[in-house]
Image (cartoon, rainbow, N blue to C red; front, side, top):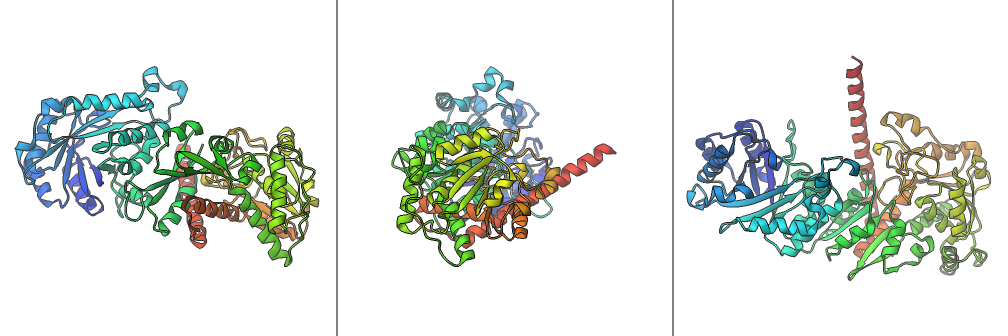
Length: 621
């Protein structure tokens, strides 16, 4: 695999300086002459002589997403002179291949120049909705595996001896990108291919694993510089290295990731990626946003895809897609983890043990003693999912787990995916659980399914609770208003069904419709005041951005025991890492990675807030 850093600038001197400054971070350099035009043969020769890396010279016009406007004759002259000057490769559009003809005989410093015959296929405009797409756009090439193969076959008809093929279709979705990777796998090597566009960025990371000899990156920024990407969705060289294993990608690199929608602010890729690097594993972890989990898993039917974290709205679908599952996921009727077993998937739920461990540790530490478990605590629960909960209670009593929570009165606030996991964990531990939500029907339905009470939310319900678990996004700040509460992906985690959150939010994401300017107000928001909580009660807030939420401050003021959602996140992440790799996670490193990810997200939000404020001020003037 070779990493190509692609450089573009408005004049040849700036382009040369940019490219030479990037030489240490790549295997090849691509000079994009779109904006420069023809700098002259002597200038090209001087650059080739000074450059320590092989050079690809490329000129793209608007038809290929480029900016060159010099006409066809100048375009061809540029490529031929680049070959004469010593370029290792010239990139020629497949429709101009036969007109350009052979270039190897043109000589140059390297003695031989090869051609990269390339094809770029457009897709929907960035941000287009389905209703806005024309029929032609909706049927873009990457949406059809057969169309992808036909494109490559057409390119092969204009190849000359020694040519390389490069195919870059635009991706409108993760599924589109996976089809491009499948094409690479089917070709068995030799084809340079990845998808363009933000939805296809992950293919630039994974293309070498699937046989692409080259992958392309934007220049990495240095102090005082802000180099531009040359294509939509192009990651910098530093970003690619950040995703790859320490030794770089190999054909055997294991691919893990988080599946959900939305995933823009997911912390899992950073946290799990750091854990994989620290363990020196040939593995990486990415975000795969998807609307249809079953369709994605079908396209990810490749042995390199080893496991997925699953977040809203796909946890129930994950359990349905698996051929086997652990007892916790069956009890919850939902899974947050998929691990490959041959050609199939095994489902697991690490949220449930993570919640139980978090609460049990806090209870034991606070009390100094372990409360006895009642082996028959769940003999009255109903059949179906509730029967699985009952089995878990009996198992927990038998192996000594969950004793610190047995017999406690527990209140779970919320009725989405995180609430489901919390309720199941508490029921399995022998607690007496009430689920409370502003949408009474949602709370009642979940309670009936799990075999516990489901009622309309009122703060007074907390007065008699020895355990309180808050699972709504109320109190979340930053992360674009979509993140900061526990769910596998680090997104809101309150709406497994993909609908509005149970507290009546209307943005459809399961999180509050917060603007960035509302962060300060949100940080002071809590559904419970100190007078609603009793001393000694365990109060777990699924929100972990900010770490010190208004609810946790109120709990401390009441003499209750505040527990950050970060603890829940870290424990479930550590359990997932062990399921993925068979190794125990480095928990101190996970904790540090979470802290770093939250700080990075906070910096991004502060910068966005400052930019928005400056724009608003400019508008006022």
